[in-house]
Image (cartoon, rainbow, N blue to C red; front, side):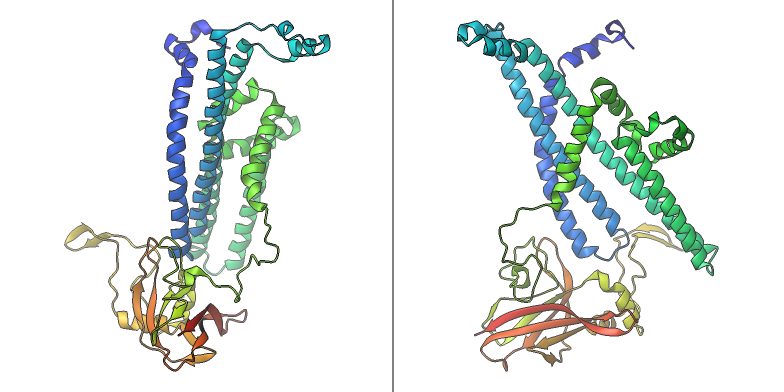
Length: 447
C-alpha cells in the first residue's frame, strides 16, 4: 500500500479540495441531465413511430432506456450529493464559530447526558464522515452508470453473435436450417448462463471468486465478460469501494438502487378503480382528433379533423405503420418499392466516380406504390364499407412528422349526431390466410 509520501503533492492538494470540483460538476450535470431526459423521451417517441418494425429497434430502445435510467440515477445521486455537501459546509461554518460541545449546560439527567456523549459525534468527526460519504456517493454514481453501459455492451455482443450465426446459415448452410437453429439456441443458452454467473458474481461483490472449486471454470468466464463489458474502465472504482467499505453497506446500496430504479416502474398507486387502464372502444382519445392533439403527441393509428364535424367532408389521416412492411410485401406482388431494405446509404459509386448525396431513393412508380398501400386498408362508416380511391401521401404536421395516407370522405348522407369511422388493415392469421383486422375506431358527431 502506498504511503502519503509517495503521493504527488498536486494529487494530495486535489484530494483535499475535490469538493469544489464535485459541487461544480454536480450542479452543471443536474441541469444537463434534466435536458437530456426530455431529449431521450422525444427520441423514444420517434422510435415508436418511425422504427416500429425495424430490426434494430429493440436494441435502440434498450440503449435509450438505459440512458434514461442512467439519467435518473445521476440526478438522484447528484442532488443527494449537493444536499449533503451543503450540510457539510454548514457543519464547517458552525465549527468555526464553536467547535466544542458541553452537554452539561443543558441540565439533562445523567442517563440522557451519557447517551448523548456516546452517540452524538463531535463536529470534527461529523465533517470528516460527511466528506468521505459525499466523495463516495460521487464515485458510486458514475460507477452505476458505467455498469449500465457494460450491460448494454453485453447485449450488443449477444446480438452480434446470433447475427453472425444467422449469416453463416445463409452463406454456408442454406439447407440446414434446423441444425443452425439448434446451434444458435445452444450458443444463446450458454451465453445467458455464463452471463448470469458473471452478473451474480458482480451483484454478490465477488461471491463466486471465493469458491475454490469453481475458479477453474469461472475464471475464463470472468475474463471473457470482463473484456466484452469493458469492466476494466471502472474496476479501480469497484474494487476500491469493496476494500474501503463494509460489504453489507455496499450490498444495501445495490439493493436500494435495484429496488428504486429497476423495480419501481412495476408498481403504481392508482385510485381510479372504476376507470380502465387498457384502451377500449368506449373512450375518446385526443390523439385521434387534430384540433385536440398536441404537436408533440403521437397519432395512435389514424386521426380526423375534429370530434364535431360541421362540413360535408371528413378529412381522414391513416398513419403508416412500418410493422406492416412484411405483409405489404406479400400483398403487393405486382410492385416492389425502390427501397430494397431498411438501410439507405448516401454513398454512390458509379463509372464517373464516387459521390456523397442525400440518403434517399427516388420511387420508380409512386402511383403504383400508392395503390399498393391504399389496398392495405378499408374504411367503414357506421359498419358500411366506404369505397374510396382518392388517397394521397401525406406527412402530418408536428414535431414527430408522422407519414401516412390522407383522404376526404363524403359524409353528406350521414345522419346528424353520433357516427362511427372504422379502419381495418390486412393481416395474416395463424394459418397464413389474409384477414381483416381493426386498425382504428374513431367516433365523431355531425352537426
